[in-house]
Image (cartoon, rainbow over all chains, first blue to last red; front, side):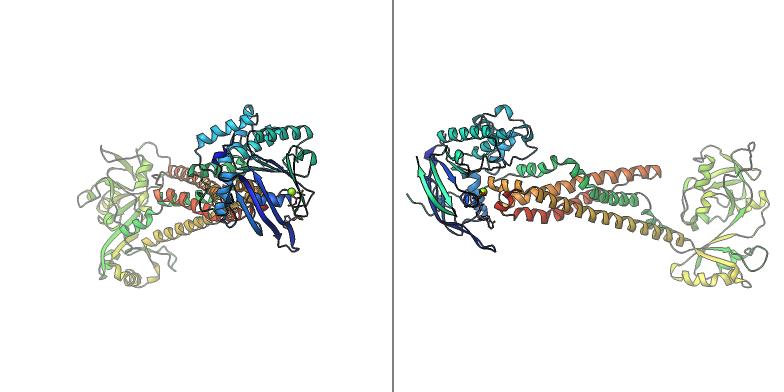
Length: 234
Length: 405
Ligand SMILES: Nc1ncnc2c1ncn2[C@@H]1O[C@H](COP(=O)(O)OP(=O)(O)OP(=O)(O)O)[C@@H](O)[C@H]1O
Ligand SMILES: [Mg+2]
């Protein structure tokens, strides 16, 4: 699905010597000297115990917070030093997010929630609807298009959120504990979905402390105390 | 393969058109209708009060000031007051002539009340006089009052000699006489008098509105009147009005000046204007307080909305919303709230004005500036109330906003 010719760089994401210090008090060095490159089309699992810095890393990858030092290239573009407005632009076009708590907006239908993924992209409303409906098809929820979030199961809600993260065809999708609020059955089917989307070309960066969930990833990076402990590929 | 500069990349922009901003801004209200409705009541009441009171003052008593200009403030009313003597005080028969001799006086018009009733026919007389008094008056009374006629003519040299009568506006209404076409007669103190004129209301002498006015010669001839004047209306040059007023008692009754009451007819009108101004100011004040409370109410609801929807703000930032987009979402919401309240308030205020004006037989006057002003005022309020919450939402750090628990 992803047209690699549109991509400016071989890498969807590159981190170079990233550190993050929370000034506190007390001062917390959440990340130290993290470097990694993520290819287009990868399914990368980032694992680590609680407090190891996973969420901090995800926020930096997603330009939601800035590192204390180091550089980040998204599809070859250095985003460090960009203004808040420019970073918003990067997120609106190049990054998709999936959260543990789904964060669907109540009062909006499944279709509208997916379309919110295109809300800040400058695409006309008709096209947003069309692409969102298509995207709902890819997560097998066309028949739920007009349902409100509270009329959907947890698994369905998270699939809507995945559709929202993908509808603008981002360079990569960041998922922070996406299965954290799902039972084992829904966890399995969500991971199946991620695997399938990845096979279709989507770059997925999956953050979890659940080793079983991480099993779906061909490449696994383990964080320990804010450092890369291991980086293994099958 | 390493591109560490962003120069060769086209810049990526978050974009949102006005329709999207409006739609996102209204979404918060669509999903919380009851709260939205409750939070605008303050604005609604405030705007309704202001529109209502301004509309009512336009429809009603604001004309008083204009009246006063037209009627003049130089009309004095001279009458016999209660003296120290036991018998009732009266003016002397030559009081009119004596007043006329005061230099700055240019018009003197005497009136005398005559006991007796005025009826439509000579058959049914149940003793009730309908509150209409018979008054004998000089021919210049209408001009001294700066009054005008609704129908017919006022008394003149000729008609004042005969049983002809001019009715005050209220008297005509009570008798059910609308105009002077046809030979309308009234049974006035056991004599038939023909109605030759009906006056418009006289703001400077409201008691004359309830009277049936005949000439002194006719009063003398047909009703046997030989009483002195009771109330004398005096027009003097405005710059000397205070002097005239002060010499008046001694001129009219040199022996007992304290028995003469001199009043300024326009004082009553001025008192009414002052009273209605106080009333107006009170309501404008109340409206302003309601608006202030309403503004705080909306600001409060918006602050709560920002706190409650922290995660939504975080999500929208993650989806690419800029600070400006977030601020405009909450500002739009606040503006919609207050304008909603403003429109409701204008509608309520207008219907109150219309209802009251109809009940008072006034023409309904709702100035455009009141309606436009009410809406503009509510827009201003929305902006003020929404500013701080919108800034707070916009400046929330995305990671902080995405935090749960
Ligand atoms: N805003 C902050 N201010 C100060 N310290 C913070 C802040 N956010 C995170 N930390 C600290 O940084 C470290 C990494 O936190 P992070 O949330 O990234 O961990 P995590 O791996 O996501 O953990 P979990 O699995 O529990 O979600 C922790 O020690 C945490 O206390
Ligand atoms: Mg975490």
